[in-house]
Image (tube, one colour):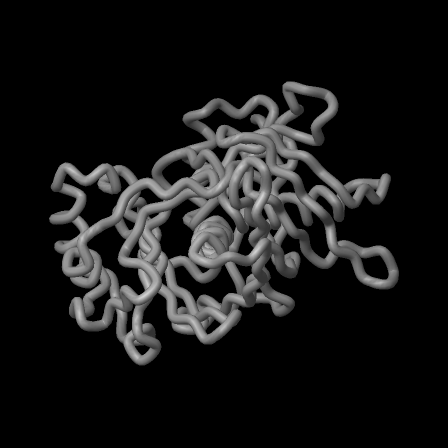
Length: 295
């Protein structure tokens, strides 16, 4: 029987049982693709990561990220949490890690307390902002169980964008955020159109007050009814919001997950570079469980 230890952590929180749950397999050598996918489905978290030796020895690891039904090219809280776990297990106290992923190279910076213990991490998204398409407000509002009048289009309408993995980003009036709920029939209806968003209809809805953002994220077609803290989506949002200004950089504090009973805080920064607008996201991590899969 083969044995594969794993660790679970809560990400984007300083309190156990808050934030977004993540399972990390720190040594996934010997696991097949099908076994990784089955383990991610069994864990039933929004994502599970599997750490492998890097293809390039100059990097720290190759990290594969699976949600309940498929592999992800990149994701936010899995990288933050995996960086935290590897830093906690390492003896050398490295503060900078580099992860090879499908979407590209992910830079990770470890946060530590005064005694040198890891407390969380910040990551750089692997790709500059790419705006992919706009979507109809009425159809997106229906997916959220809201009316088109709840959609704010002053800055932008519903838009699909990516910094490594794509999300639909839509601004909503603040008093409608708590009332939103995924309408699976509307999701399936929109996914049945010829919109290119049909493959990944993950919707981040948000309201904004200056640099403070209140967000929720629904992706029921891929098995996540609601996500308590979505680093990649909020990094994309930070980059998108900067794109509508003349500023060189921007910083945002995002609250997410309170409606699920898992309050989360994400720190997002975006900056203009020669390659385009790049984004980073970071936050705290708390260890929860250790265990072993036997296959």
